[in-house]
Image (cartoon, rainbow, N blue to C red; front, side, top):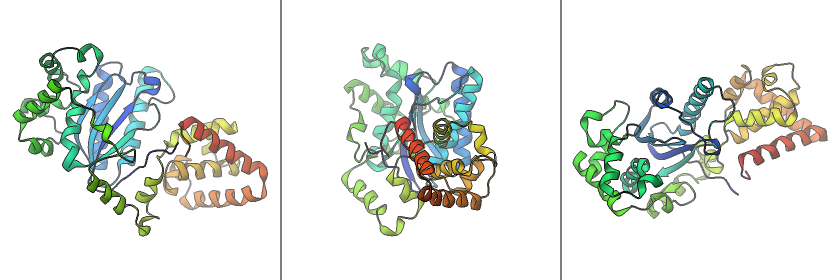
Length: 331
């Protein structure tokens, strides 16, 4: 199975969602949810990402964001790692909190932003125990649900600083009309807009999709990171590092030690570049502060060794095959 494309460009809108590993909870209590929002606000500021809407459920979350700097991957990597680290420390857990990498759908804002915001905000009443109730009762629950941006969309008193409400409210004509828009969705049990997604990641009309394809398939863009990110769904660096360490029978911590086998460090460097989309500077930082030229030398040496030493080549192939298996897709 081919993994979903990753499309990044300045000003893009995305619906982003993450689910707990094995559908387990990612929030045990309100303190977890508060910490999640604090860390979200910090990451939004650092990466200059705009948050239009969100909702937190027990085992997953949804965000509607706009990236002004074409940096969704960097933003989500930092944010997810930060919250996972805090959650694991807080609850004495270890390992992966989320089920694979986050899902991100590129949104045609002119035609679908409003519809996506409504679908997102109605997540709190989509559970079976509430779905069977009349729409007015569902509405009472939705507008009181505190772990959602909906309260600020229907009441100025519930506005929070790190959410940008204006664009969506202007589309519908203000808070009263947005409330009517939500009520209409409850009353008529709206369809899931993501059933209209094309190319696995784009929710938009034909003109929008044609524009995206044209913009990101020009030959001159092929060497740019934004183009490379269209080709494969990137894998979290932590997953790559853990996978290589486990497969080749070494301790993860040893990868940061300069005396460890350079073939192994070269394998880690190459797979991080290939499947996590990291630059050589970023890889060097992960492996204990290696200079980017050092990372380059490790990768070049690895390639030469793989041509002359079947054992090195077999180790690389074994680690890569295990990585594909763990990710659940063929890459």
